[in-house]
Image (cartoon, rainbow over all chains, first blue to last red; front, side):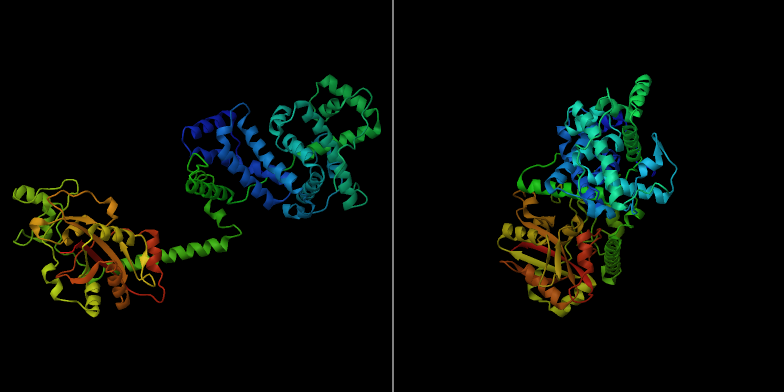
Length: 211
Length: 375
C-alpha cells in the first residue's frame, strides 16, 4: 500500500479551523484544504477513472467547499460535508455526460492486465503478499472492475471501503436513508463481483488461477 | 458494458441481505458471525461467491490514496481570484473573503513545482523575469553613476544636514523650513502638514523664455541631470488632471517616455517656481483630485513630476510634445547645477518597461517636470 503523505485532522482540529475561517482568519483555509486535497482527488479518481478529469472535479469541489462553507451548519462532520460536496460534483458529472472510463483507464498509470486476483491473493480478508508488479496489476484490474458498475454503486463502495465511512456518514454524504445505504452496498458488492468476473472473462478467457 | 446490478445470487435459507453484508464486513457479534458463516457454507456455490465478495472488499480497501496533482491548489486560488474579480465587476460579491492567501502553505515545495509538465514554460518565465530585473538594476545603477547626478545644493528638512551639505547659510540659499523657524520668525508660516523644505530655486525662471534650448543641448543637459521640463497652462485644474492621467501609463508612439508621480518632497520643493515670498505649495506629482486644498494666501498650484525617457532626440521631443498638448505649453529649462533626484525602488511594471525597448537598447534619463499656472 502506498504511503499516505497527508495527515488527517481530527474533528476538533477541523472545527477549530472552521471557527477560525468564520472569524476572519482566512489563512486557516490553507491548513484545512491541504489535509483534504489528496483525499478528495482519490475519491474523484476512483469515481471517474481519469486523472485529468479527476483533477478538474477536485478543483471544482474545492471551489464549492470554499464558497459554500457558510452553508455548512455543523450537523454533520465537516469531512462528511466536504465528501458530500465532492461526491455530488462527481455524480453530477457522470450523470450529465454518462461518462464511461473504459478508454481512459490507461491514464491511471496502473498498467497491466487483470485476472480474478482478489480471490486469488486475498483469502478470508487477509491480504496476500504480492510484488510491486502484481500490486499494479491488482490496482489496474480493480479500477477496471469499478468502472463497470453503476456510479451510484461505485460511490457507496468508495465511501465505504476506500474512505472508511460508516453507514450513517455514507447516508449523509449521499443523502440516502440508512436502509438504502445497506441495500445499495450489498448490491454494489455483488455488482463488483460480477464485474470482476466479466473483466477476467474479457481480459483472459480463462482466469489465471494457476499463477 | 455495465454489470446488471440486479444480478444477485440466491441467499442462503434464513439469511437476509443485511446478514450477509454484515458477515462480509465482519460487523456481526462473534456468535452470530459463526452462525451466519455456517449457513453460508452450507451452499458451496453461495459460499464461494460470498467469500469472493469479502476478498473484493479487502482489495478495494487496499487501494492507495492518490496524490493530488501539483498546482491544483494554485488553480483553485486562481479561480477564486477570478470569480472575486468578476463579482466585484458585476457588483455581486461571490465570496465573502479574499482568496489570495488560501493556499500559501498548501503549495508544494519549489523543487516539486519545477518538476511540473509545464516546467519549461515556468523556467522560461522565471528566466525572463530575472533578465528584466537585471536589466532594470543595470540601468538604475548606470543612472546613479552618471557624473551629472551628483547631489546639488538641495535643502533637507534637517538644518544640521543642510549646513553640512550646503556649507553655509549664505545669501541666496535659504535654510529649510525648520531652520527658518529657529532663525527668522519673519519667514512664511510653516505648513506642518506637508513639512516642505524649500530653498532658492536653481531654475532661472526669469530667463527661461529668452533662452530656448534646442534638442541637441537638451540631450546633453538631460545626460548631465540639468534638464527640466516646464509646463504651464491657464487652466490649472484641467492641466493637473491631465498630468495625473499621464502618470498612469507610458506614452509616445513607441512608449518612449512615462511620467511618474513619485517625486521626493524636497525635490518638489526645490524645483517649485515663483517668488520666494509668494512661493506656492510644491506638490509631488499625483492626480489633481488628491491634491489638498490651498488657502487664500497661497493660491498658486504647482505640480512636480518626474519623467523617464529614452536619451534620444526623438524621445525628448515626444516628451515635450506630450506634455505640451491640450492647451499646455511645455519647454525645456536648463539647471545651473545638476539636481539630486533621489532614488526610489522600481515597481515591476517599471522594470519591465525599462528593460524592453521597441527598437534597440537605449540609455534613459530622468527629467523633472514642473507645472505652474500660466503667468
